[in-house]
Image (cartoon, rainbow, N blue to C red; front, side, top):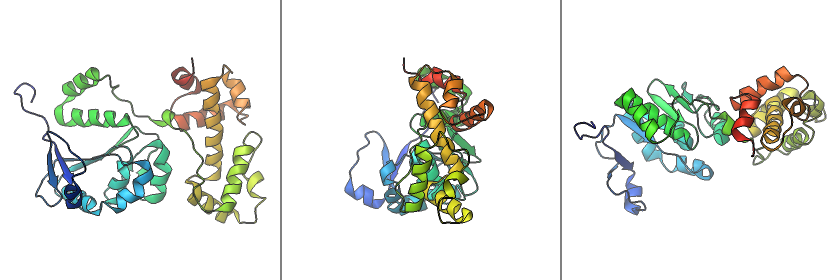
Length: 292
């Protein structure tokens, strides 16, 4: 404890035997143990993975994954930061539980681990003794939450003030940027994507686009979801809302004018979808991100 000079946590770093033999990383001041050591943890923290190496990291860390399962079985609570959710999900411990990750790879997490209840807009999730956080600074909010749980509210408030970390921020949606995914191998779906992206202003129904292609509606929806991670209508909504965000950031157009320039007719529908995808209303978004 602070008053007695004792630390709240005893931090240890865990590596596989292969990682230890390479000795690539040095962490002065921290004890490094192997996955074969008889370490019993109360709390296991899974760091973020580089987005471009997620599959490789999951494949090459089976020893760590097994160790996490063992710690959980013996009573440890487990938390992941950002893309570390993929390693967490690979353990199977998130099946049937809430989770989040970096907004740009939430769709990938949903497709790869369908038994996990992914919440793309959340800054953090808490489900029994499993915790996850979104991208970048969302990790700070999960750390504050864990400090509050293990060390008490007074310590959490003190640290949040010291590091200027806002308490109780649960949304990360407004930091997301919709990036169309073309890395799949389905040429037909690529054609539909381009149709939606080039004609989003004038499209009234998805059927206007899909009826041009020789494939059943059911099969098309299945293929579109598999390739992009989103149903066609939600994909179209993301394109329109991304355009609206750009106009809110870079222009002085009124919300009514932006609605007409993004393919919406009903202002109420636009505001509802904008709030769903970003977590905040249009004018609040402009206040946060408008270029001065």
